[in-house]
Image (tube, rainbow, N blue to C red; front, top):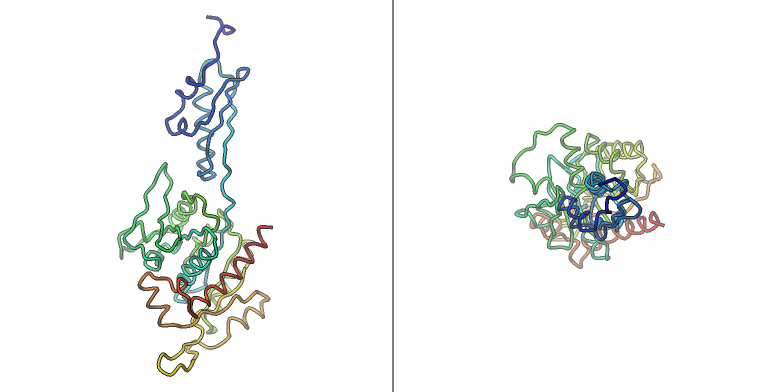
Length: 329
């Protein structure tokens, strides 16, 4: 048969040539003047997976006799997902507790919040969110985030390894793991909070270079040594052109449960003064509270309640939400 007599492939022929996963996503496939025109659903895929889908369709169809060209239209652009990194220069300042409770407070305000526990070596979000026994699954090479009982989707290395097992990973491995968490199937989640490990190492650099958060919140306790480390973390974000949303003072004042007198074992007002000196917004204080510690250990985020501790987290969440709205305009 001469080339001019080759009949155009039918839609059934085009679909049959595709890999099963790609074929399941195709909404229409037709031939127009020697060109295969394919429309496929890809709204739930990451940027990498969208590119892989398009390449797979092209490779399969261009091999068909009678197809001179392939045009692929992918439906459903990904949700515009804002991303905020929560960091500190040193460990032990309550960064993970703040992240979990900000996520809960923002969800109560109507945001569709996801949380990534990027602290590869000391993940704590599975306990803070009450999901220590749950494990994520993978579909089409993408992790499916865990649904916490508090309306938060989250992923953590703590959910991927056996409890108590130490991870002896070098920097590139940690950065690769973070990429898998960010590129998971987050669906309609419109805000990701990233609980970074303390310090200014490979995970932070990978986050800034590959994923470019919209902004960063810094957490510190009031004493000078913690503030020095917070300053280093802030400098790292500034070098990466990541805006600093503001600073939070944690463990700020302790109210005696017996007499009610407030003392300041870590000092008073240091973070606010530090923020003013650097012309960075001060977002608020979280008290040094036995109730916060007990609820956090029990996987019951204090921000769920309707008391003074919850109000402290809600006030910071309101400021962050305002910053995000302004950023989105």
